[in-house]
Length: 404
Picture (tube, rainbow, N blue to C red):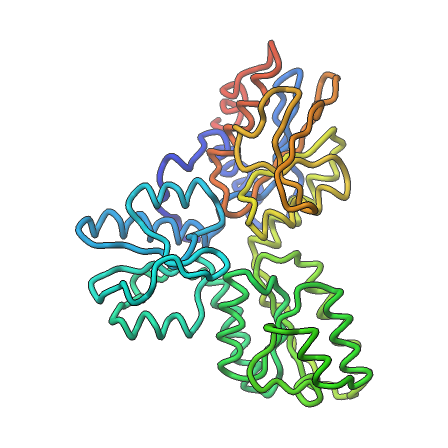
């Protein structure tokens, strides 16, 4: 797989060495057991796969090269490059301006742009409508389009099944940039609908089973269906694709449920398209690695990543099923050995927890991060943790084990 030029500030000597060693030992990626670092009074088990994925590294490389090669030009990002606050702050500190926030709210009007400006398309991609607006200004986005190839794979698959008269059902968060982009591309070729979870899939099934009124459908799925969508016609043949950062098991469960519902009502072998190939390999690897990580007996888990990162939030959900889990942006959120500031997924806000480290030795912590989180942030968390334990072995003691 291609390697990218990512700024050294995002790299970690320890984690780079670990990932290199694990890759050499397991080139087919069949071993999802964690890597356990023994610092004496505290042990830290790292998930087999975590951190920057292909699409994120590609986006970061293009963004920083664009800055370097165009010192005299105004450079804009359509919205956040990726969902990591440090990376986005670093880009802004280099002079990049955001045109929109993550929800699509305009920060700088497109009318303020001119043909000499550069606009970077983030890794999530963008809608056809926005592409047209930028083209109308005379801005060429092709050289600066960092859309993840796995997102584009979903778009291509959506087009194929839509051209075979299937309605595209997108499992994703309706307000997420990637889902908005995928919906736009899918709707250009046929009926499309976004559903965010199994609860909405069950609601959708009631329209397939009971043929409820169009008015009820339009009310329950407001702003989630394409123009002219007719639930009495467009739910007879479907294909389910996903926002690539969703929980893979959730997407599969929704697809299986809707397939059963459709086949029971229409009894046609080809009523449901095969779309299993739209799952992102990195999302699936990271989630499977967390499941492998959770086979290790431990006292707590820490997940590092941006609070608006979809893929990171699902890693948190997996960990929360097994043990106390703390979702943090970076090492600065660990105030002391007794206090941590972390994000509560359920309350959607940061909270402070005291006494989060059990009083025992050795303490065992599980650690992973999202696909948009730099490895350097994870190493900083490791440094912060071992600093709370007098007599703990330094990071260098573990680094030497993996550099041999």
